[in-house]
Image (cartoon, rainbow over all chains, first blue to last red; front, side, top):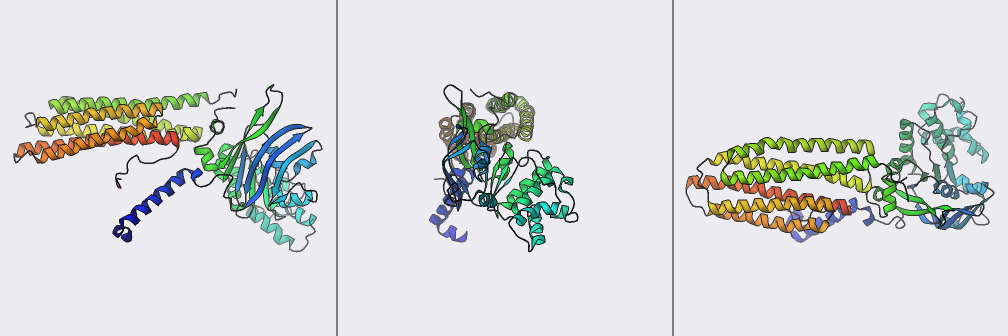
Length: 297
Length: 227
């Protein structure tokens, strides 16, 4: 500061920089566009279209997903959020009538390339579903399931403990690892599913409305967990809870339903994708504004 | 067409904006009476302004509480969030404007019934009051119309008030050595300063208009680092 006083020009420059920084803080779009300046990109979607029995469910999706970030997909029912999410680990392969068009790159590699093993994809890109779905086994066996399938036998105890700690569940279950997982509460079961997912050391975790069946306390725990997990993994979450997207995600993509001229067919379309702070304070598109403000249904 | 929802919430937010901005009408009335009291050294009218300030404070507390409730219960985002944030600022400015009118009115008894008023200085102060009333009206219209240009124009009008305030200072210095006249002039300088602050508050409201519209808060003029 003393230096600034003796050099008025430097002081003015510093003030202008500070003003610019303040402006950037309140206007994230000055910082970076959502589709640019990722430190590292996990997914690159180029014109993705998903069809069920030849009918489009989503189309024209072009966006990138950043590494070590939480990316939220929001939008009204039927806009194709879950469909898009399921593309990211080839879960749509399990539906015989589903077809994915366009280009989907995972760390620069074509996820739908001819030599890609979908099982390996789902190991690297795990999924947590809306309703907790533990196996009818013990807590320990649920978490050890993935590593065992992968043929890991050594250090299984350590793997299970690490996964349960990672899912913020260890302290609650460490004395009853052999108990049936169905004895856990809904929130604990969901964290167990997250532990099961991270036990195979994935790169990405996809979450499809992971808190919609949980109470606010359990929801808070899962949200805290997401913020911890993103240090190690990349997370893509589908949520109907706008405040949840605002609380946990770094970037938010808003999809909405589009109708053809005859209003016979409907499909999901990406309307806006940007830094979450911008989506919830000053969105660029009126349709996003109306949706996040809850003014249209 | 998508169906409109949260109609009651929208109506409530609009009604709270109207109530908050009506506070500017209340301030305008208070300032008008204050100027009349200054001109005629009307202590009774000054007392009316002081008593009526409770109404402005009441409006502030009532709308402020309702906005906090809306924040807690409706989780507003985007433009609604910026509007509520701005209204909280606007309310604070209105409350301060009311207080400044009270400050001026409290000075009037101090000058006495037969104060040796200087007509030129009194005229300057009354002119400041008139300009400031225009600023208040314009700030309200700019907010209602989300008119950033009109809001920015408040700076120009505020500069005129600032200049008049400086002229008052120079006149006070030139009034000579008579102790009673100097005391009156010093008291009037405090009044001029209070009116000048009211005009500044109107510019603050203009800055909030720009924030609601653009999402970017920047002072129209940086008092600590004037260009």
